[in-house]
Image: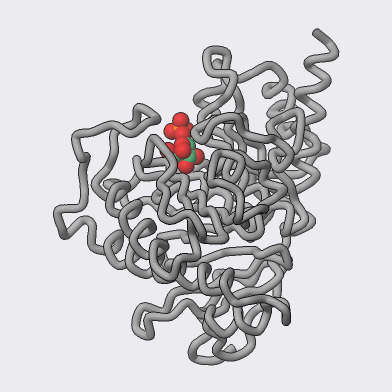
Length: 345
Ligand code: P6P
């Protein structure tokens, strides 16, 4: 532990605390494959920069004009917050440079944003997940995923972004909370960085994060239980049995914050399908798939209750899906409960 090592809120069971001062730029450079062009590292650097800019505003949103609604609704039919639009603009602006990104899929944009027709990467993102919490100062976050175009010579089109999460080359989130953390994976483990605002750098906090063996939390909005798809009550009943893991219920209303706590301390986040909304609320491409990619890399997984989230090929960019993502034993148990209910009819 040295002066730059943030005093972690208890190093996670499954991860290695940083030794010394490692910036994200250096970590990316040291961990990219020798044959890499550096383009993906450069893109992740750009996303880190976007995180710094958005963090600086979320810290002051209460003091500036950036709280409140724009007065428009996004394609989801949700009130757009000023910060949603700001975060979307920052991500688009910072990722438009260098020619690395040909297209972006955003929760805040009805259609794909085409930046150029030659960039090797497609970026999917929820610029500010949990934004309904902005005015109550609850942690919110940017969720992102990166696909590499399979055939850059082919005309750019939906085949470049309507892809299963299994084809992601990287994914992560930036969590704007008590501190700003960037957590990402490029397919070789999950790594977490804390923004030191004085230095203006994301510094490595933990590498190779993995869900702890003994989970501590489950994140379900129990108030929605009456609307849940069949089988969910079977899971909650299982949780409350004396012979099952003694979990606490924590639900923030910001998936990225729930996911992060469950990654560090063990747990599962769920947003089930509902009787009148069987597809659930969470969007597949830019929320569920990136989180499922991270979970997979950290020894957990994501499911829609029947299949791995990473195996679902989207049919449209704002497609929603039921989501159960986190520690393997809990996701497996959830799937089993839903399937047993199905079998029992
Ligand atoms: P509810 C935020 O709007 C979000 O998409 C997720 O971040 C969060 O987990 C969920 O919605 C909260 O939804 O219906 O429980 O308020």
